[in-house]
Length: 241
Image (cartoon, rainbow, N blue to C red; front, side, top):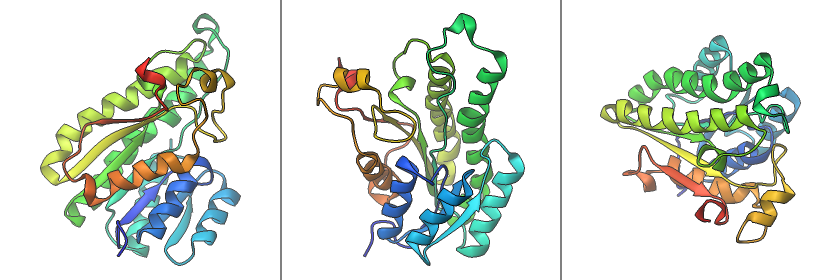
């Protein structure tokens, strides 16, 4: 038996990196996976690699209509949603001081990194109630725990993900829906592979996406049945310093 047998799980930003790794792992452990990404080619490839236990739905996570479509497609294809991995995100402008950050760039990162998490949780709640409960994993960052220079929009949004996770966990508990945040450090993905982070990490290396998706699998599974509103850090000791 798999650890998430027959659970219907939506994974956003699943065309690559942590999202792709999580989609594959969840499917191997028995889940029915809805792979979403704004990159149609990448998302389709992941769903096709998984096979019959996955479908791909193109999604702009900052679109309310797209969220409604994703949940509808999940229910039509597999049944009520049991899990959501809010993984999609962008860094935004790098090496830009707060004083020089343009409004439009700041707003874009807010839409992709925060609004998407809010709308995703709001959109799946009804389906999870029908399912009899569920688990939501919001992917934040170590930048949601400590500050970083010249990435103001990213730090702002990742702290917001941490906060909205706790608020939702308290509100959704009565419905048997757990909500937790995951905080990766330096991960070998298309978003962040920073030499400075590697050098500052006590374990002395960048992590592989699978080292985060293993934790995500645990949180989606019933093994984490008493964990909600919590922060799970995967950073090689970076924030312990």
